[in-house]
Length: 348
Image (tube, rainbow, N blue to C red; front, side, top):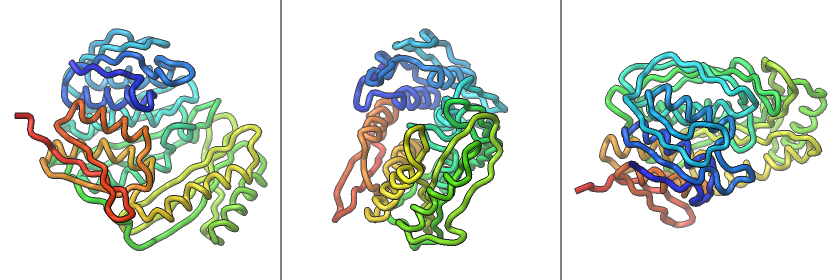
């Protein structure tokens, strides 16, 4: 049994999600204590419990402690079962964190799967839909598997009600690692605003700030018309597409924060990535680490990527991966670039 301390490192829900994912992939039972110990409300919140229950359905797991507020969970997985699944969070909790939990196991399953997810699609402290669709899914495909994502409805805090469909096709020969050390030449760059249920001038004000700061104009400034189930919301996004990688940055509107401040936050993040010269930003590095770890484990070949910043969140994620897989991560500084390397280690 793998035992994890949920207070280690950044002490949040990622420890739980990565632990569940790798427990399913490897078949190793998991016990996690002090779940989300460093959060204002520790223990399993609604969206975290949804991840646990989804993992149990996909793997036929036996569990102890799968209830709201629980700070200790025992999870014993059975065989992963590909299939058609529906997972719903009866709140604005991120349904994409549920996808993040079950996706690794389904990428290694023996048949395709389809997921229909409902809940939040653009949430604080969670990957937004467009990030997963444009930045993350292409990397899955580059490893030989396939992930297709479709947004049916947007879901914002606090109403939720978003709907996402995911089509997952495992790699026939297993996940194949690759090096992602450079972005390549720029291909496209644009900003877009989702603001359903809000005054139209909010989108224009946000895009005006982006235009002035980034030097963008015309089709690089987009107001998106998306179906939404209920409740207003606001997400301003910047997409930077290069030959080898696409990055997506998102700034969410919130009560008491001006449209201009929402845009300025996004400008700082996008410019920071541009100036770094790295292939991936901090959030994509976090998502890529687990994919790379699985591919290195399956293939036996190493992999590396450059990143603009290695956060405590990513460091914690890597340490959890190392508990389950015979893979080791190393951070090296090569010139001015941060390079994350993953290699398989001998278990003998």
